[in-house]
Image 1 (spheres, rainbow over the protein chains, first blue to last red):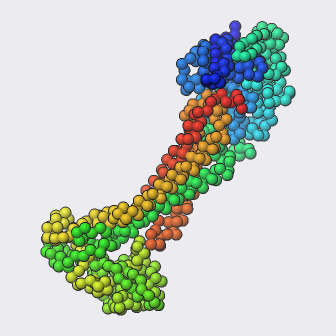
Image 2: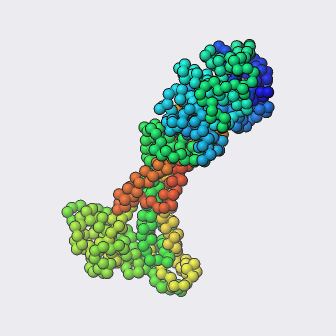
Length: 255
Length: 385
């Protein structure tokens, strides 16, 4: 049975103050389960990114509870929240946010470097992460030498290299063409095949639903609906029995 | 641009990130380095001048063979033209363990430039065992016993209208002949020193034969100098008896702090340090601002505050090392260029080490504003940009 790697319970988030205050989340309940790729869909301004920030321990909820692997984040000081992010969450951003002065392998190593993991083992893990996203031949390339799809794959390698329990992706296909968007979603779906890891993808892109095990809809800061994704309907209830949807799955097992 | 070394180093990426952030914008990097070099050279020159001044104001005391100095009460420095009674010499010699008491007279007088006009000179009159010229490069000290003989420094030839050893002129209408030439005895006041025996100096200055400026006291080997000093104090009224160190410190205190020269030099140094700090702070701040999204990404990835601090401080230290290296080269060039001037810029190993420390402190202090800025970043901004 899938376990919740991240769980939000009655989460309220108010942003701003005084007359300009906005209630971005209104009592959200959501589970990011291991072995699942969950899509969070909703119109602009619905609270998707705020929810992602709260689940990623970058914003603290005004009310309600967020639990990472069962541990409540309430009353944790910023350093402890940073440690939670470092140890358990990998992020993938729409704008990739790679470091332009570092090559692909150093961008991936950075996720280990901030955890104090250095040396040959860190290099080997960064190499393996890049291999797993199909970038074996581009490890020394700098971001400006990579296409958008390749940059997003480096960002995914960076997100998974630390073996996090959850991957939170914010519009990962938003800046990509159709082919690259589908390739990136394929990789994320592969990652979600690992029964110890859950993936939450915030997206507008209807093409991505075929990769989802579950789709959650949000509107005006409230979860307004949830349905099984196409992947789940096609492959049956057990994600572990699903075949690899795209070509990058074979090396992901190392993570 | 690809990595030149295909082999990956397992070292932390902090240095690599810092170095590349620093070198990415070459114009800003050059501006930073120029700022540091300008600031450190300014501080070097000011402090080097201070050290040079400190040495120059005691050069006569440093070269006088005295165990004790008898000076007129209230004397502020070597150049202070206060007078002693020559009869004090006999009283000093009567003190047990005093083996010699050599009079010295100093004073300003007018040197007639052979091709017209006069120029002030500073006479130093003393006999054997007293304050005689050193670094004699032409002629010899013994030649000063010849009639009208004087010694001057080669660097003042042009100013004094002298072309070579043996040339003659007048001081206060009395003939003088240059029989010895020194090298490097320059005065920070820019007034040339002229060495001659005591009696002739008294004449040239226009002082009475009974007037002297100092007594250089020689104490018997192994004698207790403090006890001799106390006895001299008891014997000699209206005088002070100083060790060379005390006289040196008194001269330095007068010239450096009594005249405000030291404060001006320190003020200049402080200004240099402030200018440097502001320039480095400004460039580090703007560099950090340009990389805010990257720092926010680091924070989103769960990097600790310390990790980010290290990146920024590493940038500051790199700037410090490169800037100091260049500033030290410029400083050494200035030291060489001013070596033969009236007020040389002096650099000592301690000053060099101190300047390096100052550069590092200045650059790290400059990093504070950048660190504060980074710690205020909302990591959630990575979702917005």
